[in-house]
Amino acid sequence: MKIVLDTNKWITKYYKWNLIEADADDNKFVDCAIACDAKYLVSDDKHFNSLDKIPFPKIEVLTAQAFKEIIEKKKRI
Image (tube, rainbow, N blue to C red; front, side, top):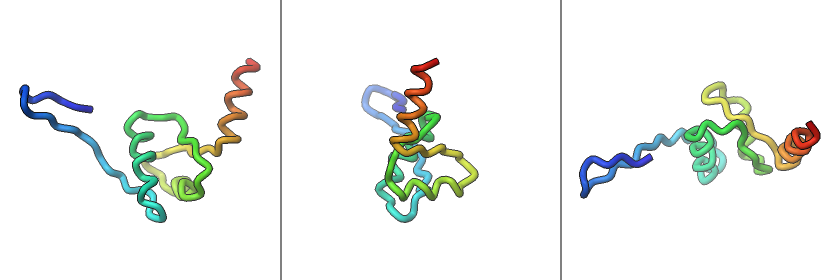
């Protein structure tokens, strides 16, 4: 999110949660999911499994296969 203060200055607001310690590079995806209030974060990367143990903010991580099954189920409805 960018907020214009005047024509020459920009401020970008963000927060770095740093929830994944095993692979800090993965945190940008978690931060993005939190910021956009995503229902799911889809990844087969095992480092995201550590998010299951974190009570807040709650991020539901699905494998690509599990997400595919959800999509296929919704198509049938």
